[in-house]
Image 1 (cartoon, rainbow, N blue to C red):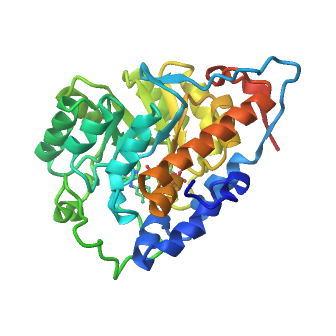
Image 2 (cartoon, rainbow, N blue to C red):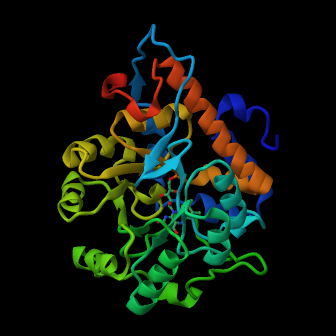
Length: 347
Ligand SMILES: Cc1cc2nc3c(=O)[nH]c(=O)nc-3n(C[C@H](O)[C@H](O)[C@H](O)COP(=O)(O)O)c2cc1C
């Protein structure tokens, strides 16, 4: 066991300060920062606990099944790793370390376009257990070539991030932040990022991207039910309800509050995943009760990585899975793929 022993009781939030303490200042800020006043960063976490649990009793929960599928891929637990750039900033194990932890647990990793490890190396570890996150770059040829390269390496889907047509203003100035020696973006030259993602990203570009590959294009960063419904109308197979962990636009609705209207609007026509502020197993249950099929875990994976490399990241995933298993049993839920909507009520 690598993580501080109290984490088992107090939860993953305990790791935030511990991780910050082992990282150089600039690296810790890179990991934690949110947009502007960080209202949404805080609200994302808090909003999950505004949904209270209403357990069923006298249900046989001797065995709890946490198994599920995402776009037909079986996962042991419906907790996926969110795309996060530059993981070698957190620890030399970087993306490879996270990939090993995910593969060993039969999970799924969404690899960021800002990866600091070549995707060939990650694909060799993950097999089919990964999806490729993309921004639409102004350089369409480069975007298309990365998309095709990922597909040919076995990525099961592309995850197009649609909530950042501009770079937001982040709270903690990163002047003075230098990548650790030998760490940089490997897919997209850092200078290409200054051109940034394309500000004209619209539904046309979604279709353009879908035309480049045979694997599904998922949209990440949806909050409005009408956008979700449009995605379903346009044949999109999955979306991620996300506000980018509060890193792009401050003041957005926390995802725990945006989720119900989205799942209602799509009515099962596509798979809905959610991220932002998931810190406890009960948060996963809440998300599933509100109609999500799986959650994405962001910062806590990097806290675990910072503290204990691949093993630390793995322990974070295990801890959340154990909490989910226990809390599901205590809620009278024997199968997390079938969490009833009336398990939660908001006060
Ligand atoms: C250090 C860091 C880097 C991130 N990089 C990306 C990225 O490259 N692409 C993307 O779509 N989202 C990125 N995100 C957002 C995450 O995918 C996810 O939406 C968010 O972190 C989830 O919230 P949580 O951290 O509260 O779990 C990043 C988040 C962090 C913390």
